[in-house]
Length: 196
Image (tube, rainbow, N blue to C red; front, side, top):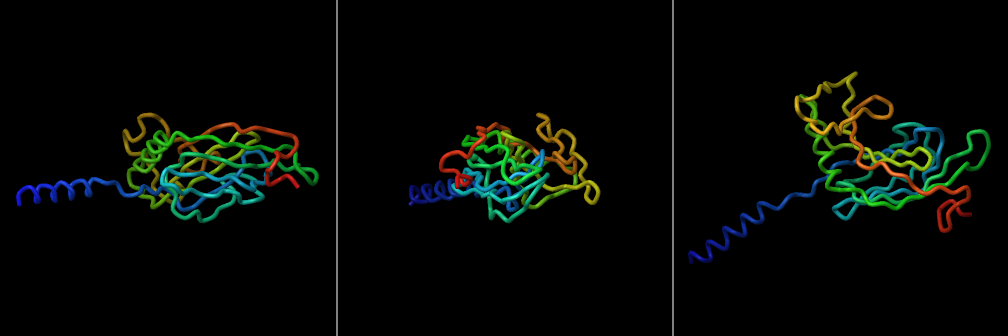
């Protein structure tokens, strides 16, 4: 009887130590830092086996287009295609693609830092953002604290690694989870959504 009780207690302790899924974002943004782009197909996979799609079509500016992405966990991989539009005529100036891993352990540390960054602001679930600038592509996370209408004062000692930075529009605080460069071509990549 004592052995059975010990096994039952052990199983309950193990079950109690299991972490719940860590969902970090429900809203996605896709934007650009240097003019108009068409983002047809960009996806970010997360550590929970899900992810979000950021192929929102025509974008120009930051944060860009917005959509509900369901529940997204910590990102681990980014893949997709985007193209820079010709600002003076129809068509495209260049085409880009990427397939790259994201350091999910570092990304989680940065997300948790931002979630514990503020003295008083308690954001619900954050926003995951994909931002392009020619071959450069970033994955950015924000809690959406805007100082003009919220208390966004930093909690002392909350960012010892200085991961929290201002957004590209200088409107809120963000952490950059991925900052990489894709491939560039003057013609569409084979099998890309731009090849027609």
